[in-house]
Length: 182
Image (cartoon, rainbow, N blue to C red):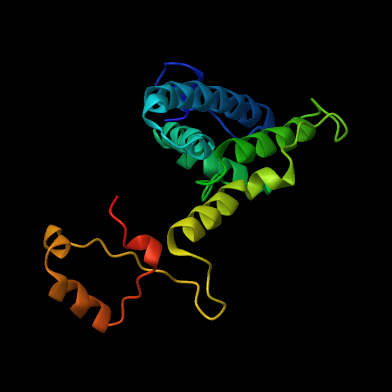
């Protein structure tokens, strides 16, 4: 529950004021950053490709965010016309920072010139990385087709060429780089 972010009492927090919303979001942001960093640091030594580090950190932050029941907070943000923090999987911290910055202006704690707004590119970084990694794995996107299906073959496929031939006969397209052993 969001009340647990600000204190340990079980009493619900009145989220109707923008000042309380701002304070709650600032506490949530700090919690997500701290918990996300702790999780990421546990994973870091296992991540082989440096280009996956930023995605891993975002995933750790997303998991930290989703450990909290955000329903009351989400409902309280809607009347202010602010993001309900839904569908932020690819951009956790930029979304939190943008909502906090806007609430700071609403509360008179900052002017639009003082805002620390995330750059617009940060909202699309997750989508850009997903597209890049998808093309690395599957090759360039075909203009007439955006959907790709990856099939995990059973162990028998390593020795049963008839099985692989049948799958290909049924329409699976293999790229040469996908045929080499991993």
